[in-house]
Length: 245
Image (tube, rainbow, N blue to C red; front, top):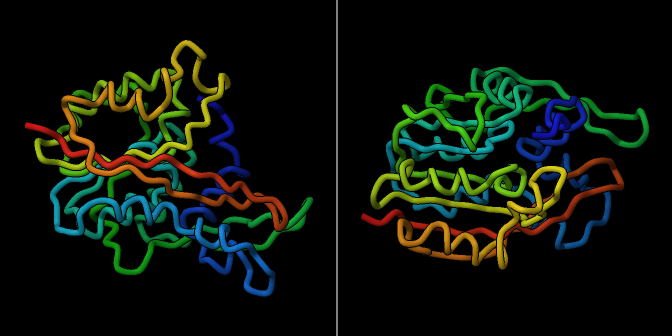
């Protein structure tokens, strides 16, 4: 996995992406296209594809700095968040523990604005358990879950098929699985031989059926702010599955 996810630059960008207020990402004194505004809140929106009813255990794979796991904890009694980045996991655990985590929002060059990431209101940090780990080599004793979430993870794994092959043993019968991926396959992360064929959606269906039933397919845009004038606007393919059995 790339070492860029251990840098202060990426940590700050992801803290803003996950915990920044809308006005901190798109300041209200500027004019922004509607499509940019619609892409805000991605880590929250993906979790809304689960049912709103209470559940037991949740798992957020590729949890980054933890906002989606926080949102899952609103309805799950326990949520485990796993990410390969030590830096991201330390940040997520600190926020879950009640810390106000300071970071710098880059404006341009060396100019920046100090901000803080805090646990969202109404989230019980005691329900959150953040662990560093490899989504392709998860512990055998991890257990099973009512809900599993993995957003923007698959196309950053060297061997994504290993994770898909493990999912049936992670999701309880009748449980829910939400996968989101922008399908940005790059040899920097995934060898060409391990790219999906013929396309990402077809590959997901081949790999997950018959263990899962496809419940929904949609697109969810997201926005990552790099500087005051540079943003990544991307659209993820989001699929919702129910575990058979």
